[in-house]
Image 1 (cartoon, helix red, strand yellow):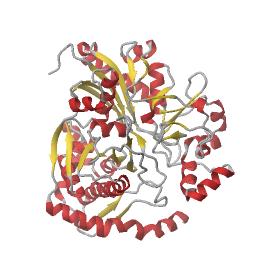
Image 2 (tube, helix red, strand yellow):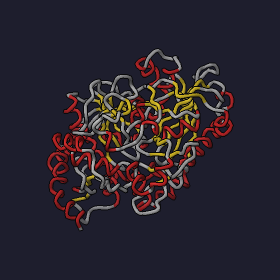
Image 3 (cartoon, one colour):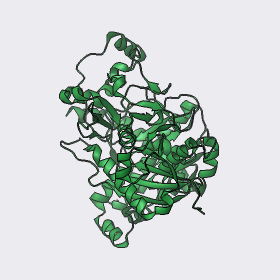
Image 4 (cartoon, one colour):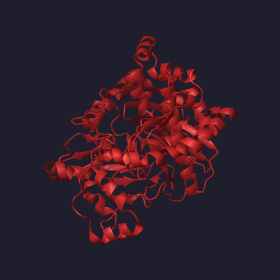
Length: 515
């Protein structure tokens, strides 16, 4: 029970499709929250582009904050600090006066740079010796800084600061160019192992060519980033002078908020980009040359496998195949996902032979891959297709878990689930069956916000350390055990079919790319 003298944390969780302003207690309970769905999520000037105005995100943050304040005037006085967590690998260019120069380059954007200029000979020789040429070329072309430098040189010439969205929102709230080292997951010259910016002597620096002066100062999770300015206070309703405490990126906050900090645990994030993370003391690359990200949990890392546009596919399915369910959801004032998830009960495990591989975007180990669906027959319906999406994302995450746990030498027997998809009992049950492991769900699906709030309370000395904060703020609410018959069927499909789809289609993908 919340008492009017208890400390409160105001946390903003900015996702790809919406932003949430949340009020958390030190017991991990949500007093209230305000969610604003982004419409449109992004705009595309050309096919494959995905951009949004930076001011759009700050305006929505302020709108959510003001609305939450109106409903919680008394509680608002108990807020001791603010935290923020955002999606990753999305960048904002600012000039020397702090003005925005171009829209946010979102992680969804598919454009690539040409990178015709050769890299330094010493670096090239090193990459060749390590067998990294393909990875380096792919990283260079995917780097937003390189695309802007090639295609918008006048913008790059004016750029004084190159910030991730997290850094931009922190600047808008505090006036400081600072960010958490646990938020630096993307195409920037960041030394993931040592959790600091690369120096020019680093062999990988040439991939990005971003001057250190253009990047924010980095602080540890739990440390102060700055204080809320008068201007930000007037627009957001947040009390001027409140400290903004560093947390981390959305995925790392979810892993912390799900309590997956132990060697036998992994966290699955069922968000726009589905992902699987474990927590390790050692720096362990989840795939060769793919970095392990800094964890919000001190002195640890989060090796991760991501399924690009994972649960974004649910939104796509709703838009393309579920008009009736969307109408019903509107009439009942519930989420469309709640209605459409009933389709999962109409189809048996394995979808009567329909199998989907969710390679919506290229990866380091499969750069030419595309999504595929095999096994269609006249018995299949849209219910089968919807279940095949959920199962396919599950197979991809299981594939990642088995690879990462082997590299980290950690046996995983407990899965925690986070994100919007984790609200569904059916999806959680399917996850237990597909993984053949116990699945846990904590007291809120807002685990990204919860993890960020944990960092805030530790930073404000409400807790002496992260361990005690987690014990107080994270509670297992539901447990889903695998059903033997379903688990055996999924394992057989995974081993005998799913893992063989990409090797069989790899040649066709290459031909498709040529054509």
